[in-house]
Image (cartoon, rainbow, N blue to C red; front, side):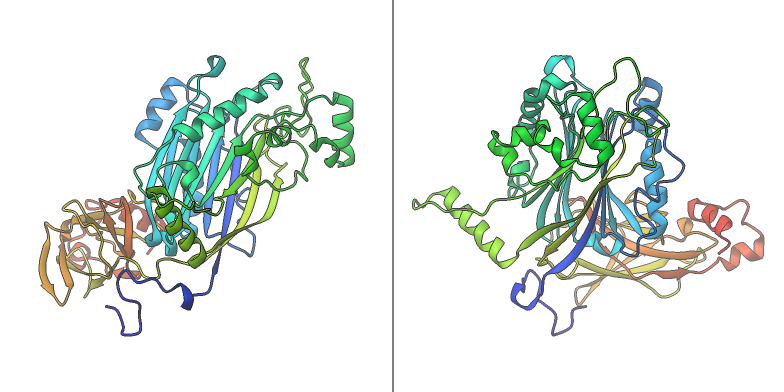
Length: 477
């Protein structure tokens, strides 16, 4: 329930709230159809004292042969499984993901932010220039983060030195054609903040191989920047000029011999290049026209929002990770600080487990809508193990409207049947999932599910083990 000094439903209090900082860790890596590496701790900086609030991981050339691709449609692909299993024990949830053949995009968040990540949508665009249809294009995830519209676009663009213009055409095609079911930001360019990253395939032109390798050996990378195709194209393409990029103060990430740090020693001897990049665009401030039309009203509203709820981006790190050698590309890491004023201070729903929980009795969930939201008969409340990996990783669930039993002072009571509650118990949380908003909008505090006394007395554990119980046996609750 809300205290008297809390904001009322739907209220914004920008003047009373300071800007807050959030750490975003991004990875882009062309994995060249390789199976996952054994350990991604260094890629995710898991030993760093500064833990990210968000992880965004974009892969290209994830293996998508016919047998593997069919199995991936039914289950997470091995790369998704690796990142999810690595981050879930650290209290990160996979909020969204999208796969288009070899292109994969994963978005993870700390659990505490999940109720404030809304309007989640993902889509893809295939590009078909010069016969590349299907294995090139872009996948994106867009969402509202504390009310700020963010979009993450992972691209794999046309290869080869001579196709710089085609790469720009492909990017502009993706930006023009990707649309979302969102009035506030129906296109990528409408979002407050866009990250564009991936194997963009821009090369270093004009300079010869000897000069390029000499600059790399001497770490005089700046001598190569003026002939980097992306930097060159930015000088004449208006859309590219709106995107920022940190200095390329790391050696080119393509092309390496497999299982080595040696640049291409094959007969082709491809020239090294910064093909793997991370750029970002903060939406330019609106400039309202003198004429009062519908667009002008929208722009004025947008300008007012930008003033009341500022958003700033700072890049803290832009580098490659040279220790991974399973691909002919090295992964690139970008770490950012997002400084913003939250538009939302409270979740849409509060909920908690009432009384003692065990598999011996039906249990009660209490929930309370804190703000108006578009509820649905398809809304549900899920029971999750602490350390769960995604929305679908629930132990059991109950439909909110089907099992709703009382309504008192805006507090709802919902039953959860004992049949699916884990007999071995464990630490759990409850999550309210909104079908209309397609996201979790409320999370309970962790609570203890007690071990079933009936199961202990009757020796039923071997016969009645569900998903959580299997985990419980290995973790020895």
